[in-house]
Amino acid sequence: MAAKSQPNIPKAKSLDGVTNDRTASQGQWGRAWEVDWFSLASVIFLLLFAPFIVYYFIMACDQYSCALTGPVVDIVTGHARLSDIWAKTPP
Image 1 (cartoon, rainbow, N blue to C red):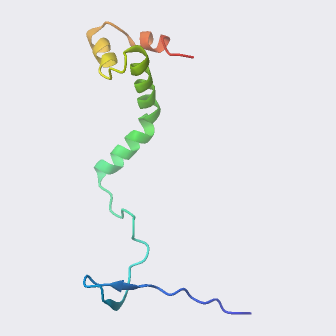
Image 2: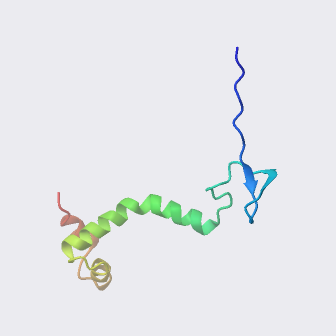
């Protein structure tokens, strides 16, 4: 049974381009190991409300000529209700 050869671990380069004997820390490149609460909350918000955001943009472009504040202004001022906007949803 042949033994598997271990892959060579690249040596870490210093700022002046000379390699030294330290090995690069493995598994940390491109990963956020410490995440703050704002980033976590914003990702969860986007995951939960992404379908509603897409629906809002589609309805704003369909019913309000792409005026993104139009539906909010109509609902706040009482010119439209959510059920009115929902009733005009294209099939």
